[in-house]
Amino acid sequence: MLNTDRLTRGRIASLAWPIILANAAVPLLGLADTAVIGHFATLEDLGAVAFGSVIFSFVYWSFGFLRMGTTGFVAQAAGAGDEAEVRAALARALLLALAIGLALLLVQAPIRDSALFLLGGSEPVRELAGSYFSIRIWGAPATLGLFALVGILIGLGKSKTLLLVQLFLNGLNIALDILFAGVLNMGADGIALGTALAEWCSLLFTLLIVWRVLRERHRDAEPFIPVARLRELAPLRRTLSANSDIMIRTLLLVSSFAWFVRQSGEFGDEVLAANHILLQLISFSAFFLDGFAFVAEAVTGAAAGSGRRRRFDIAVRRSTELAAGSALLLAVAVLLGGEFAVRALTGHSAVQLAAISQLLPVATYILLSFAAFQLDGIFIGTTRTAEMRNATLAAAAGFFLLSFPLTAALGVTGLWLAFIALVVLRAIALLYYYPALRRSIRPVTAGTRDSRRIVR
Image (cartoon, rainbow, N blue to C red; front, side):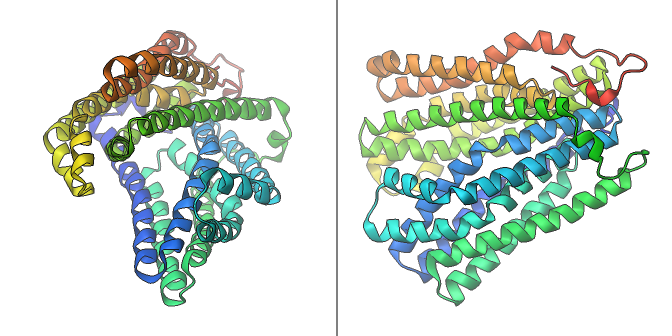
C-alpha cells in the first residue's frame, strides 16, 4: 500500500507526472488520426472519423465509472491490507465491463442509427461514419476492460505503469492506422480497424502486466481468483451502487458542457468557434489537474482503507497544495500566452478577437477548478459516490439557472461566469459533505474484516 505518512510533495509529483503524460497522449492520437486521413483519404473520410469519434467518446465517457469505481475500491482494500479484496474488486469490474461490452455489441445498430440521425451531416459522411462505427464497436469490450485495469493501476499507485500502457496503446494504434488507412488505403474503415485491434492488443498487454503485479502481491491464503468473494452479494451491490452514482454524475457533467456549447452557438458561429478553442485550453489544463486528482484517489483511498485519519489528512493537504500551485501557474500561463495560443489555433480574425476577449474568465475557471478536481479525487478514492452525484446535481442545476440571467445581462461573458459557477458550486457542495467523510475514517476494530470497511 502507499505509505501516506511519508507522502512528501516530491513523492506526489513523481506519482502525478506519468499520469499527466498519459493524459496528454490521448489527444495526440486524435491528431495522428486526423493527419493520416488528411493525407491519405477523402474529406468525407475525415468527417466520418470525426463523427465516429464523437459517438465513441460519449459512449465510453458514460462508462467511465469502470475506471473510477475500481480505483476507489482497490485503493481502500490495499490500504486495509486485504489483497484478496484487491483482486476481487478488479474481477467484479472486469466482469461488469465484459457484460456492458457485450450489451453494446448487441444494441450497436440502434446506437449507431440514432447517433448519426442526431449528428446529421451529408449522406456520404453518414454512410462512412456508420461503417466506421460498425467496425470499431467490436473493440468495446476491450476498451471497457482497459478502464477497469487502468483503475487498479491508479488505485495501487502504479502511475509509471499506466504511462507505459498508454504509450503502448497509442503507439500501436498510430502504427496500425498508418498501415490500414495509409498503406492499404482503407480510409475511415482503416482507422476503425486499427483502433479496435489496438484496443484488444492493449487489453492483453495490460492484463499480463496487472497479472504479474498481483502475483507479486499474492501472499494471502485465498486463491488468486477469490471466487467465494465474487459470490457475495454485498460487495457487488456496493459496486453497482457506486458505479450508478458515478454514471449519473458523469452524464450531468456532459449535459452541462453540452449546454455551454449550445448556448455559445446562440451568439453566432464566431463565438461558437472561439469558445470551442477556449475549451481546448481548459482541457489542456485538465491534463495537469487530473494528474493530482488521480493521485488523490489512490492515497486518500489507501488512507481511508487503513482507518488512519492522520494519513488521510496528510494525503489531502499535500496533494491539494500541489494542485493549487499548478492551477495558479496554468491560469497565469493562459493570461500571458493565451493570445498566442488562440492565434496559433485559428487564423480567423473574428474568432481570434472573440476568444481573446474571454481569456480572463478562462484563466479564472482554471484557477478555481482545482478544488473540484481534488475533491472529486478524494470522494472517488473513498467511494463516497452518492455525495458526488448529489453535489454534481446541485452544481448543474445552479449552472442552468444562472446561465439565463447572466447571459441576458452580460452576453458571452455572462455565459462564462455561469460556467465558472458550475465548477465553484461543485466544490462548495462537496465541501459540505467533506467533514462527514473525514469523520467516517476510523480505526479498524479487532475482528473486523478490513475489506468490508468501505467508507460510506
